[in-house]
Image (cartoon, rainbow, N blue to C red; front, side, top):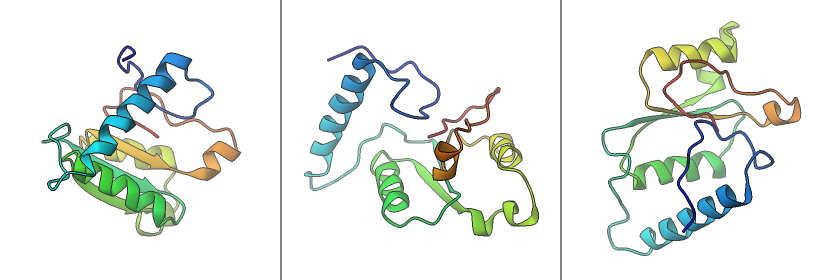
Length: 131
């Protein structure tokens, strides 16, 4: 197995080294085995709060992220753009900062427009991860 994960954010594949890609693939292979068990849970994120924030509507991706978090024993909160303060004009950066202030341990931000516009997740003293 390759060395562990040291990044705080995962914003795309282009920035990953070959070793990091191998680490992700090896981790997913091990996690795939969890799905074959009778009890499909591991305690990796027990006691952690994960916020899935989806800017664009999604069924498959949001559900797969939520299911993975549940299987890792995280407490999950799902937010969509249509039910957030983005509808009142709040910026995505301010929304992320508000989630940080609530001390979410992990923030998953899914915004396909960000990749198309080559934007990056807000940087700073955040506790969570932006995907």
